[in-house]
Length: 355
Image (cartoon, rainbow, N blue to C red; front, top):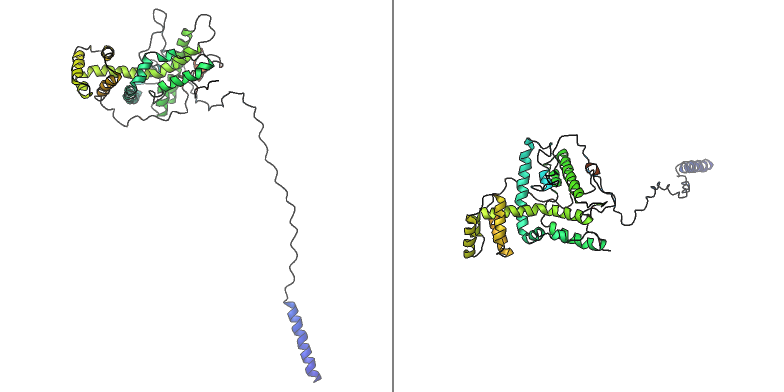
């Protein structure tokens, strides 16, 4: 019996020791979370000086092209009377002639001429559609606007832009050709230089004796008349075509048959040169309403062949390029007669608000 109890107790003691060996020890307490320390603040940029009231934010720099020294004929040349002879076309258009722009060679003419043909085709249509506006411009409405005082500037710019914007869908000729890659940067830069120099020459010629600065009215009027010139020339071409093609165009104009017969007879004896033909249209048109003049012109434009290739579609107004030909302060190095920067630009991005 004593041996039996001893065996049982020994077994229990053995079991207890074995059981104690597999018990998992308690998990130690987690370490204390360190206190939050905020990260260092980034370095602050240096404070920018405040822009003076009314000052415009900086504009992206216009791409500059270094033009090498070349022989060229300037656009502005004085005649025997000591005055600058008028150009046969817009300054921008004349600047594309090789005699003026030596970087436009004979091999470049096909692409240039193709673009100009498409542009002329579209400009003639736009100008005739806006015949009432063009006739106002031909009557000298821009020259009646006052740009010289703050009180008059806002309204004058608003009126001028309302007249020139509808008839100027492509904007500046050189800028449009450069963006379409019809002109290289060098060709466009030389054209800008030519136009800039021409503007500077006639601007100086307009300065009155003893005047330190050019009259701001003159500068603004020149800019807007230049913007309108392409459309007024387009209408003159349409008038010449209307007389030259009178027999073909008038029957399709929708005008009264008696009037068609009268106008057609008058055009049979028309001269052969375009200038005289355009003048004849202007004479005959005095007895017509503007609707009748427009109908005759549109019928004449319908006789034109459509230029080959894709039609020319205008870009949005903001092209990101400021041509020297239209911006008085775009490139002073190309304009030896540039006025001090205090003189107002001829055409701000937006018409100034009345103050």
